[in-house]
Image (tube, rainbow, N blue to C red; front, side):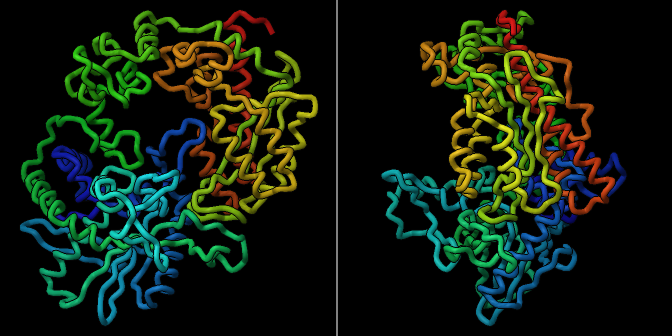
Length: 608
């Protein structure tokens, strides 16, 4: 059997994956594995750094339109990465966007053949270099280390645009080792990239040995990542070094780390061979290796987790990732409870519930009756000052900075929606709606800011209502930095922001300021079993109205990203339709806030 690097990584999650993949191939009467498309998995990894700004959920179900829309950014990243590599290491790097034109390595092990393709490969008189491009940022590595006296100390040091392990670091030995070990956790944010390169090295080194390649030459192994410190100047010369001489691309030398990894990779290979020989598709305990709700989650989540993902699941307990406490006071992980057969909310012993909100969720589920704290919501509502401005931004988190002042994965605002409620209960979905949508993919941030300032008139007071305010507040701060001439107006908007989530859920600091106890301030204000443990606006809205996103052509933040990314490639007629779809979607987000707020007034018995 031919086993790619991706298949190696997926098949070694647990004994069941390769058996399920075999069933998948037999069902389709094909020899093509679910994991054969290496390019697709690279792009899914790219999308993992993006998220739905309304829900905060990782992008998991990546549809073809999204892949097509974002593929040019990934390709451009690979091209520029190799340009920077050639500038640093020399021009004879083998590189191609076409997989079958890339440098490849393979070796045979019994009846199996392991193989990989390289993003970049270079051979010189003295050594060989392997480059693996990843659409992540250097921050994953520079933040690896403790904070000492308020300053981050990394176990990596940067020299000549290469991050290397800093063995002369001032970090205490135990703290250094604790952070170093994270590099060998294949399911951590940083460890997954190290594991990928270590598997690649395993294939290369075995191919080298079996085929007697590059004898007498050392091989260096580099991850090639985006530099999180890079700030684009927007010039016509492209991604030249910035004002601080930062390149857009940084190299992470993992030669020593991947060498230490080889014994473990070998043992995984031995396990994999046994899995393939046995092909056991029987149930296997669920675990961290499933990576549920991550962009890198196992593709068979819906098969293995079926019972645990049905409505009324134990996962609907908020903060279930912190586990529960058994009758002896010992922590019990949610995944362990599921493996013991506790799938449903009401299956877990009620004595295991020590968080007040979990007790509320349990009671709400069992009685099929909503929970509402009238006093907290009423006092929260009284803090609102009219007129109310309901605001929502749509952003494009491009891996490559596009405009002046942006860094990799900057949340670049291209649209906003605004509903204005001049006095309680007076707001029309159309007449009181204001919006801005960039006409194309060029830089229109200044025009957007100027219209936003014009639309939000706080000269006589008012409240700017958002849903989960950290996102909008950060964007406003970025605008104030980029356009200092409007800093005062933008700061004023920021100071008047109120988070609608405080009323639906809660906020400890806000309610303590209103005179509530710490315990009461921590309790959620409202819960309904249909929320299923989530306070995303798309979960809350159906409880307060008949409105739905299902009938919209653009129905989520991820679809909005994909739609905007196609602007420059559409005909005038198609562009007009896509723009209308985006306006409808963003408009629904702000109107949803209006409807939810009015619904809260009604539930607490206040007539507006």
